[in-house]
Length: 537
Image (cartoon, rainbow, N blue to C red):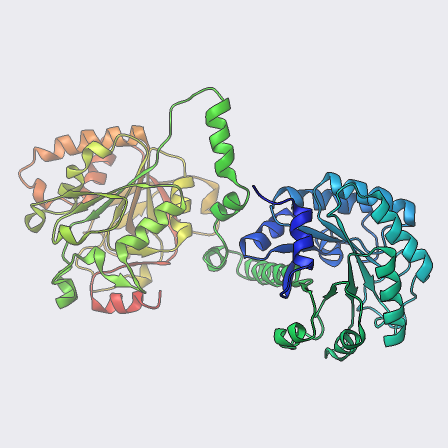
């Protein structure tokens, strides 16, 4: 059985080793703190006020802070120490605060001995301190109010911040300890730990000491351990990190007027869903909502070729199993599919199919791979085209956004087309040039784009782009593909047909094929030169 959060925190304070808390300012950051391995959370007043867009001067009301803290507590199982500034008023406000924190399973509260409204410790000099006896009354009121014996009150001493020196810091520390504080937080804004170490050397009471080394961050942790500090708070580093990341991404998007550069530098949306625990909601929906037909995405990867232009690299494995930056090409494709919740992956192998050893994929073997092309391989997996499916070549690399945009585009048959013809390698023996109803431009999103023609006989000056080897089919689109393959199978040259022949048949029958444009950001691993380029992709 998991210990109460209050008990967890009290054990951290009384631990015989140095313990650490990390700052959080909302439910998401609190969950990240827990997942990082930290044993406790510092509910930072600076962080919460910054996330709310106000100053750290009690501009956020105590009830607004309490609402944020409730989300933080609900999102985590480790204890939270709330930075409650001066207690938001006198002893009476502190009593009400303690009751509300206990109701929300907050483990502890930190009160600082300054005047309300407080000023951040790193702003200005000679900040006024609260009357020592009045502050002792707040501590006593908090301890008398708590119902949980393990709830802790940490008394924060600002004597060094106010320029009062060691004697004042010690006098206040002893008084607060005698008033019932469970720990003393001694604060300093010097760039070295001298004030803290001087305090620890003189401190004789058994009360644990907590420090916040924001300014003296270069001090080795071993120094704090040797000084018998009980707990270290990393006080504002997640909010600072988030600001840096958001500024960088926002500036890039504004400057480039595009998401392409940033998409692979930020977490995918699925990571947000994971942190939100969306999977639990899915389980609950299955239990409590009326049943409905299951939706299941699927991918078919055509990976039968050896890769004749890759030399001895493919003597013992198919091209799709070549390693690029430490992973097989096929694994990189599988990772893309997993990222969008496509876990049913069918791989059509051929040459050295036994070398396709990825977990959780179904391998279908095209034994005629040496005499056939990719349309024949697709026909081997036709039974799997019975629902929404993505069909992909097995030798392509691409950025995540390309697959996401393909999946988000409505239509029964949707292909991805690269509009950047300048990047096409002359070494390509077969290029799927296309003509579309509209060329790519900055406004192409305003109306759907249709495929008009896909043919290797198209010259670049007549083409609008190149199909990169990705197509999405709905269940209805799959029926059209079934029909097309049945017709094409009757042709004597079926073994030599390629995917463009299927698309051309579909167009001739009047079926709409939608186009999603991209602009580069993919590679077709056809030869050693492109493989070398892929190592830097």
